[in-house]
Amino acid sequence: MTSRFPFRKIEPALFSGLLDDPVLHLAIRPMGKGILLDCGRIQHLAKRVLKSLTALFISHAHMDHFMGIDTFIRGIHVSPKTADIFGPPGMATKIAHKLAGYDWNLANESWCSFRVHDVYDDRIELSFFPGPEGFIRRKGETRPRPDRIIYCNQHIMVESETCDHKIPSLMYKVSELPSFQVDEKKLLQAGMVRGDWLRTLKKHFYGKNRENEPLRVLRRKGTDTIEELVQYPEVLYEKIRGERKEASIGYLTDIGFTKENREKIENLMEGVTLLVCECSFLKEDEEKARISAHLCTSDVNILIDRIRPAFFLPIHLSKSYIHTWERLYEELEIPPGVTLVQLPKYLTPQPLLPCEARKIMRPA
Image 1 (tube, rainbow, N blue to C red):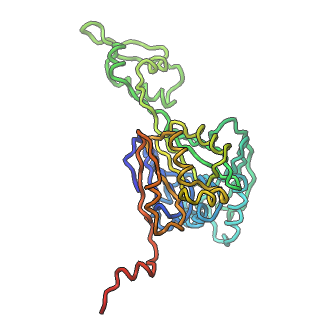
Image 2 (image 1 turned 60 degrees about the vertical axis):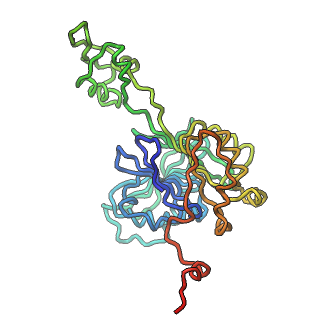
């Protein structure tokens, strides 16, 4: 599933169907790079996609969310880069065990390294696995965590909250950071005239010029255009900047429908553009959802109504509904203003089931 959502910097693609292991890829257009949310079966991802990944964000280490880590390591381990892996407490230990299961006697200086972040509520603990040293674990620093932000670059910000799935499970919100944009009406009202000075102002915005360096701009005076020195470019930009809201993606999966979880979900996902959310069970199996700390359709309907995302994409339906999967869409109650995005049953290659084979067999 690729999208035509209102994103400027992010291009989301769900490399899994409704019943497949969750794998959400976000291409960061200005960087030509990408990140991955969860890492189930990813053997069908192209090698160029794997090599473009700069960070993985794992919700929890159940097999269907984590087993693709071996494919990821295989795809990039000979590339001279450092990849970040985020996950709940204990993630670095699990990565260490994964890496220790292989022999790395042929390691060389051109191999990649992994920087693993164990995400706690109040801190992030770093571990480093340098490829040239055969991925031997090196303990890194512990950083305090004063807010929800766990990752940030020039174009996106990733926030996280820990929810209960009988083990810690992380949900994520990926937001586009503000872009340089000029409102033409505000520019006209300020009496400004377009010119190369806007390129310089853009550099101020992205921190490529010295702070408070004066800027020569063009201003209209009567029928003439004059050059004027502006002492504080950042003040000028606030007067002419556009007000386009930046878009965001919320990702939550394998989370129990508890009061504490609901409060965290609603606080983090408020105002999200696209909500990608597990819906493992139909409403008739609510008890199964409670026992396994998953969501069912009646739970999801409540969350959608509270959050009101612009787009909603349900994922991770239990394979027990393999022959009745369409019922999920029948049970969802989509509020006005929310667009439902539907997935087919499978996107990844699947074996042909005997019952399906009989349907296409022809007599000799």
